[in-house]
Structure formats: structure tokens, C-alpha cells
Image 1: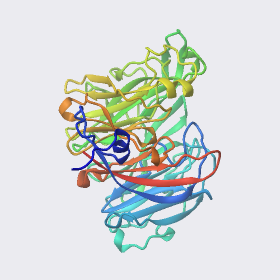
Image 2: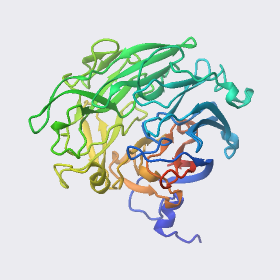
Image 3: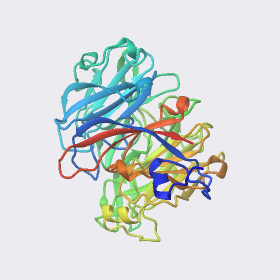
Image 4: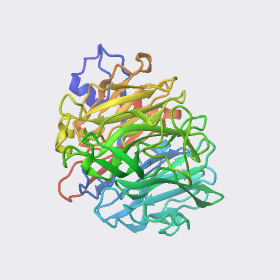
Length: 466
């Protein structure tokens, strides 16, 4: 008879505990492979440049091959690939570019165009012009036909393939169900910026324009008025029908709306969607509230708020969202609940101590339900949400801890199902969900904890869900 594992060991192994009282689906660790023994390491804005949850994507899969990106200890930008049939062997390509600033915003994001099989790389920008490279045609659609190396990528450019987008932050790629590659980015700065879109077709990019607005008045609980802000996206996610979902939070430009200068001027969780590839934006009731290249979605647009929250609770921006198989949008947010304090005075310290994660789901009637997750993040950083093929939900928390809930329970039976301290993961992790439909597997890219600027290993863990 198999001997029962101690709880701590079972969680570290990613196993569901025998006789567990909860019905939450389990997670199984399949493998853990090394990308780089010495990735660049420095802490900026509480994060690492190789692992930020807003990257979308630093690791992704297409046509049986997986791709990952990071900066080495020598600051070089590296793109690696592996055949999932030979999952332990990574091939690396070093791009002719080195990280320009010690800033965790300056991440590497990858995108693939299914139309021509090109792999796109956007990187190293925080309110600056981006660095961009594109592969030869067919690299991602016919990977075995191409020898891997820097030669498969063109020169690193300062425009998006000739499209001048100006200074930007948060470059992200997203693909429509029809296979059209799009590019999301923010122009302007924190507290005074707008979200914009570009689109790739026929081998070239074109700018579609801004779709959010930075202007309008917001009055804080203390009566102070802020006149500028930016919309921080929890993600851009297409469902199988072609609807583009965007949950978000606002950050005010005037920090005077806060009860304390040590807080974070984020407030409210909002939601909009688009049924025409991001050209027209609608609120939860279906009313048009913005157009790309025209009037942007703004603080005064009606019907945006999915969950109201004042700016005094350390609400995290750019956390996580996902869509289940029915097209229902879900979001995960985190903040310091009022039972701990109504006035966050030290954002980093109090979030690490008191922040809790919350699951939001939109009902068929358009109303949102919010439930607190009974496992605290225990960290300042972000959590991601993914769904398996049975629509069970998984929260990928800082340090790679995973909390799950079953669809059968209505996503109420949240329980910790994976916790492996031996990973020694720093904080936020990057998650590849594109393996889920075919394999029921996710890959988690993480970097191990170091100190100062001492480089540390960058690794990928493969986990079976359910």
C-alpha cells in the first residue's frame, strides 16, 4: 500500500492530498528545466525585469514548439525555443540588443502571427521608444524547417516594423480567433496615459490609435479632485466567439485623492468589451462607451464599474483576467480589505502583510460576483488566473503557489493545491496557457531569489492541471 505523504511534501510535489475535504482540482509537477544559470537580477518597483505578470507573453507555445524570453547576466536579450517532443532541450538565440536601463518595466514580450508564422519581439521600454524585432516568415508555423539562431531575426528596430508609435510602456501582443496579431501599449505615463492598439496584416503594422482617455474629473473620498489618470489593464483576452474582454483599474494622476502619501492611487475595477477587434468598446450593458482612434473610454463613461473601491486600499494594477469556455470573463484582483485598515499608509509593507486576493466573475445578467480567496498572497506582487479544459479555475500566486477552485462549486471551494518552496521563486511568474487546450498543461517561467545584483537561474516548470 502506498504510504500517505505529509501535507507539506504533497503540496511541494504538486499532488492532491488523499482524503482532502475540498473538491478543488489538483496540480501535478511534470518537469522543471533550466533556461539560464545566470539571468540578470535586480529589484525595481518590487519586481524583476525577467518576470512581470503584465508581459503577455514572455513564454508561449505554437505548432508544437515553446518560446521563452529573458535577459542574461550580460544584459543580452535572449529568445529560446524547445520542441515539446524533446522538452528538456532549449535552443537559444541571442539578439543584438542589451537591456538599456535597470527598470523592471523594460520586459520582453513575444507574439506570433498565425497568418505568416512570424515571431515578434517587443522589449526594453518604459516611456521610451521600443526595441522591436521580427523573424523570417514561417519560423513559428514550420519551426522544424528553420535552424534556430539570431540570424532568423531581422535587425532590432526602434519602430514597430516601420510604424512610429512614440514613447510607450507595457508592450503586449494578442491574437484574434481569426489569427490576426495585434499590439497593445500605453502612451503617456502613470496617472496620465492612454491605451493604444496596432494591428499586423500583410506583413506590416499599422497604428489603430488610442482607445482610453486620460482626462475627466474624479473626486476622492476626501473631496480632492484629480483631472488625469491612466487605465491599467488586467489583460486583453479574446474568447472563442471573437469578443475582446478588458478588465482594468484606474490610477489617478493627483495623489492628493489618497488619505496618505504612502498609498497607491488605484481605484475601482472596471470592464469593457469589443466585438469588432478593438475598434468599438462597450460597457457591460452593451452601450458604446469608446472608439479606437476616436473618443476614448474615460472616467466619465457610464456603466464601467464592475467592483467599486476607493483609492485607499492598495489595489493592485495589471493583475489578471481570463475567459472560460463559455465566454464568461473572470478577473483576479488584490487589495487590503477594510477590516485591516481604511487607509493604507505603506503600500509595500501593508500589501505584503494584509492584502487578499478576490475572484470576480460576470454573470449572464451582466452583474459581477466577488469572493475573497481564503489563501493570502503574502506578497506585494500580482496573481494570474487560468482555466483548465473543464473550466476549473487556478490562481498562480507569487512564488508559484497555486490555489484552485472547481466549476462544480461555482468557484467557491478555493484551496491551496501547489506550493513548492524548493523552486525559490522570487515573486511574480510568467504563465504559458497556450498548451492547455491540447495538453492540459501550463508552463510557469520563474527566476530564483538572489540578492543585490547577483545573477540567478531562470527556469520553466511544467504543471498538469486537474
